[in-house]
Length: 123
Image (cartoon, rainbow, N blue to C red; front, side, top):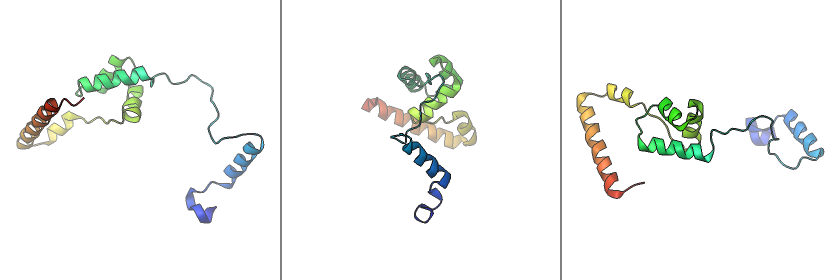
């Protein structure tokens, strides 16, 4: 297996463990159910609420959105990155790095993009 798969090959101890599990009646590679409370922060209603809040005002801070949605900041980050596949960009940091001319150009382009989006009624 090492020759065929290289470093991505399973270790012998893992192979022996899987062999024993399948020999004892296991029928799939899925993880066993675990004890403990299931995660409730990434349910459909929270995902929908976070999506609505972010789309209504993209300039809000993470803690503002999390408190408005009624979830923790960690849960918000999990929904934003994992479920909605979005990333936060700090507008304040970007604007301080730009020269006055670059800021004006950025404002002009942003205004044009907003006008184009409004004309096309993009959801």
